[in-house]
Image (cartoon, rainbow, N blue to C red; front, side):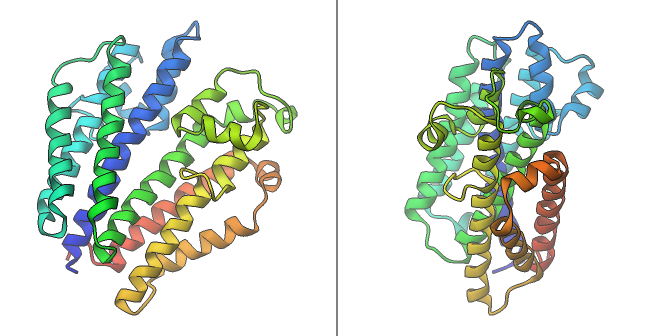
Length: 312
């Protein structure tokens, strides 16, 4: 496969995953903001999680609910807004049109047209839940068309690399920004959490129901960390995402006859998770662990671009 085609597939699905992650995070942020006396603080936290707080402040200054919502949904100055990343996904889909089934291309194109119209003007707080539901549903629509119609070949695997690198990055950022909720003090390890903000963590990855199926109603810092970092059954956990990356690098190795450095980096990450314990991670520092993981996953993505000659 041409490197440019692999690049288009990889980034198409990174952008689609980013649009959904942003919508999930905004939905959780809005719910939590409604319970707080200083609601704008929660929107600042959401911006920090998406790594756009600095650019936002440079453009708008003080964080307000309405400006934060507009920034994350459709502000043209924000390259990571939902509108911007869906447009980028569509542009990449056009570049690799011949590598996609008709159903996938039509789903992406339809999603772009629907969201372009939906986000053509500012979205108020009252309309926000419905708008975020549409964004999530459009991402699911593309994912369903992709899963149901694409041949499991190198095209499929490059798309999956983009999906799970983006997903791992998003979950890690969420854990880092919200680590003060997981561990507000050393005494929090093993204790019940009564801070309503724990919901942000689980809602943002659609994990409330799955968490309760696993741990019941007892919300504990240790259990949340275990679930979102090391549980390989949880489809948005770090361990699950890395496991999928290892699988897809392996399939690409079978197709091309060699496992490149990026695939070896993914395997090393998986080995680290297999030998890790949540207690060890918490004792050594959740923030330090997550920061190291973010560096590793960014390095892995950059190495994949070199290994597969994305820009040749």
